[in-house]
Image (cartoon, rainbow, N blue to C red; front, side):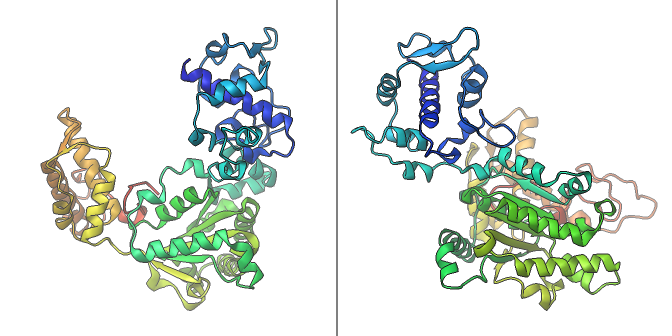
Length: 456
């Protein structure tokens, strides 16, 4: 019997078990199954399985085909509904073909089959391995649509970017972090796990972090990876966006940003460009912008990981520009320095782990890349790969990486050159126009993680 039959039978058995037991909720359904039944962000019983639903949930193109010969399956020729005729037979058949590891990703089946001697996985154990419904894109979109109902409110969505955990590819295992960064992340994880205890003892001033460090050192990527690992929606806002004219009343929109986070809670609210607060407070900017910044600071004071289940992370490339009013809003400061030689070697190992490289020596490359960030190293690798592809090669050499490092440093140094008068339109190698010290990449627009280069 092929894997397609196993996929479809498991799906049918899960659906029928879920419909039969009202104590089960959508968090008991594997995410791949929930996708088949969303209706305006909700999953309503009864769940009816047709070919489209089975295809979406299992990935089997013709779901009836692999199970049509089984004695416990049936299809209604008129409606196309697929169902089981004998759930016990189906369960016997399935348990002969799957192991506990697979059952541990299906809370509904773990619960439905708990009385069988050969089932050792519990519903509670399986739920720990399943992403909750609050992390699904469909659920998030439905909630946002409900909240932003008029045209003015919809403009607010231009101020924030909401990502579901399933849309964030990197994990904390993809990162090369300092000991201090790992320690702070572990504290956060424990604080989230024990929110009730912290509330009980009155410790509420926790869960507001400020990530500081140069561009490209992984501030944004670490925050996103944390959202992925914790299965939390990720709400990202760039403070400079509040200057956009079409957004209307800026202070009102700052309020709405925090309201979005509270409605999506538990979630991570990531506020980038936090130095914008200090710039605005000490400048002659329009009074509306200053009101917006004051609203922001008050909102930060009012939001809480313990009460609101919102983990707040601010980030800045320019900590020297922050004033005391900004600093005191955070209970932890996490430093993101440029990686040292040992970290650079580890970064090279991580970003090349799926590649073939002849005579590969990451320690040697790390010694040659002093001062480069994680995003810089990713760009070095990108250039080496593209260079090899121009020669129809998918296996790199150590020499390819050496050449890419030299090329990167040469192009990067161009930003420090004054352009010759009359040559303002000259093209810089790499394709950028070299006006105002143009160069092939801009550090200030990237905050890649140390280990997995990702455009932020």
